[in-house]
Length: 332
Image (tube, rainbow, N blue to C red):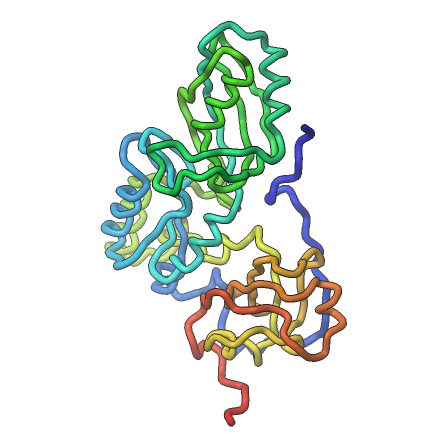
């Protein structure tokens, strides 16, 4: 099947519904948050080493930073290395968004027999698109057949029975099982020899990737020398985790109502992505770029543009603390 467009390869067009200025007295751009808030609402793009589990690595980050809560955006097996986004404190609310984001891996597959390079390339192409997978026995999820999308399967090189390929796929795809199925299709059998994750949603290995030693060193620089830039070197605002989501931007007067759990009504919308469709999970932002809620769209972008009244999105998860923006709704 032909290669399909991965979420990180899509372009987004922003449509303007209305013009309204934002009040500088309330809120702030995520990158300008006070340093303590960087720890509360931050995400680390961590390079997981081989050996420990994703849970253990996340626990170490939590201990180094003296935090009560932290969570990771997509489990990697102990032997697998690479991109593991770790959400800190309040930012753990965006974990579900990271789990929904696509992933990219570079894999060494070991063939159990002799196969021509041309045949390998042909079978890799055949596995692009929707595939069926049943999670392996060691998986922590229910072993039921499910569909996962393979955006691309690019052959990189081969040496003997080792095949190196790059795969972009939907979250929840098991690469170990993919290698097994590729081997079956080739008629010789195969297994996953080595695996590294190079992307998890918007986080890549070329974008601020740090290891545990970096985390410990930069955090010590901040504690001992009060060097705020040290923290900003390895912690991203949690909004980065939502970079691939379709977005709706709202006026200041709508923000606090959303933080109290209200659904988004048409008058609150300032601008939005053009490709939003009903039932899409969207990220709702302030005009300063702060994440407010995750929501489910109730109408398409074109329909929302023409709406003067009515609900346009249903709140799924509140991300912003209450009362950062003033209360501007009427109480009965």
